[in-house]
Image (cartoon, rainbow, N blue to C red):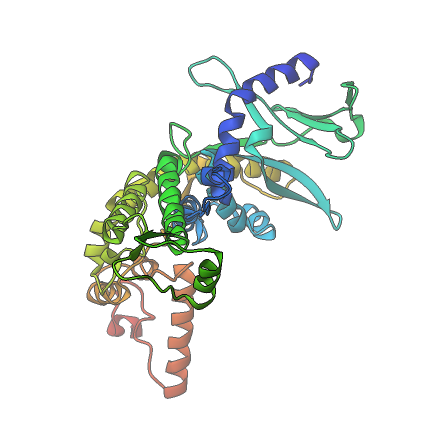
Length: 442
């Protein structure tokens, strides 16, 4: 796929409409909120306090979905070990967590997959791209098939831009110098082995909105409320002293500032002019705004008193219903991109002769394990009641801290075998299904 000046102009125009919105989302996640731009008279207190719930919301959502590594399951006759090995080499769970954060911030993210030679071995590697400098062009068909993907970067010192354009057959890298001359880097360009465009777009939801986007105005209101509370406290300390029936000179004012005492004649009085503060009402308003922030984002405020105490597993689930639904929706959209990643890895590893059988996403299940608060005692009791009635692998997988149930079962079997040998306990479970000891002796 050729990159032209006209195509670059089209891509810049397409991204320009969303660039300001993407920048705003990142600045809010990083804590650069609107309150920091507020200006007041220099004589007035102007504290600028940021209570960054935007970052907390994104981190809670990403952690709930990706703090536990994603698992990939296929039928026993299929071998996806080469794919999992490539994932493990680059610690793909760390990339997934970062991807979950990017999607939560921007509403979408991009992943680029490439091949790199390391120690004379070809490795398949994934990297996340900046959504502000990445673009995928889709056709006008009902399937919205990809036509090509583009991403670019700018050298801040030389202002030289490097543009990479990929389609389903080749990768081309262009250099756009400061004189706007576009040149193909032939040494790094050429055909690829992926069998499709090695660039994936992940979305957070159908609207491509970030996790906290609906609550930005609420967070602004909270920042202003907290800032003004501190401003009012400071202005209270610097309140104006009004005197009635008395006059003071400079010497009296100096004595007042030094000794904090002022002698007044009979019948005179003094008082500070202060704005009345209703802290109780302000605190109620603050709690209301915070509750609204977590309500509209459907995220649990785990510091809220509703999550205190020893709640049962069912009670916790009921409190978390909106959040669980949101996480399930995110899981659905993220799975689409992760399925595509799996197939790209399968294609290239098959062509590199590292996989004997080509496996597509329809033969594989992605298993997410929600990192949510659970009543572990209740889970253990349920497992104990069902032991012997439900297969062990399923029961062990219910434990919240277990990553691979089969590893636990293998360890349990090894411990049991060691105990039998140590204490001379016969193994009555070696017979086949439906076979008893008498028939085994015969």
